[in-house]
Amino acid sequence: MRQQILELLPPAQPTLEEFVPGRNVEAHAAVAALARAEGRERFVYVWGAPGCGRTHLLRAAVAKAGPGAAYLQDPALAGSLPGQALLAVDDLDALPEAGQGALFTLHNRIRDDPQGRLLCAGQAPPARLGLRADLATRLAAGLVFQIHTLSDEEKLLALVGRARGRGFLLPEEAAHHILSHSARDLGSLFVVLDAIDRYSLAALQPVTLSLVRRVLPRAASGPAPV
Image 1: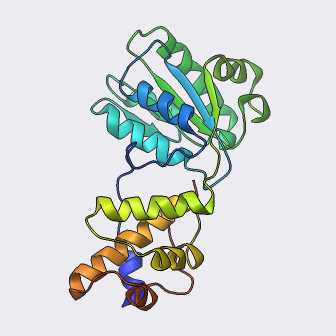
Image 2: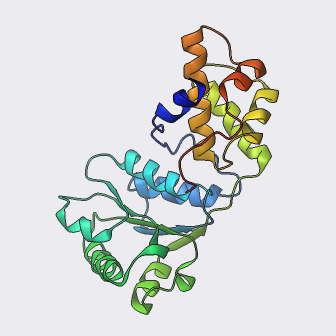
């Protein structure tokens, strides 16, 4: 039953507000401005190791931008989308040659559209992605930010803040237990926390260390690090 609760809970919609910046204050501000169509910059690229939160930023920016925005892993699909306000293209390090050509075309199209905005992400800076030179140059010409992985202390703060936003108190020892027995990327930690919250509501019991130990499997699974 405990494992089933964790497996069936869908991931929560990422938001810019719940993203814990840590050392990524400038990157977070730039992505938020892009999502709101504020400022002059229309091209932003973020990069970092798996689990750093870059996919969270892309999905959250699309949600903030509203209708017309889209999250993609295949830039070739952009041609079938009407009236894009913001396009977010993820996992550029995995783009095949055809995908690189599609992204280059998309970049040029957005550059010629005063309303167009492009947010991209990968595991390395543009020059180290192994992309075709003209595309790497285009990506590097916009704003480029490294997304640093949060420290354990920052992850604990994020868990406590997430719990507060959901209307319950997460004891410090319970937060430490979640961090120690779950996948360590923030997306997975949030999925586990949300599952614990749902279980506590169904059981009519407060979230305590004892409850967390009962609910949380020794190897809680979560979404792939992003």
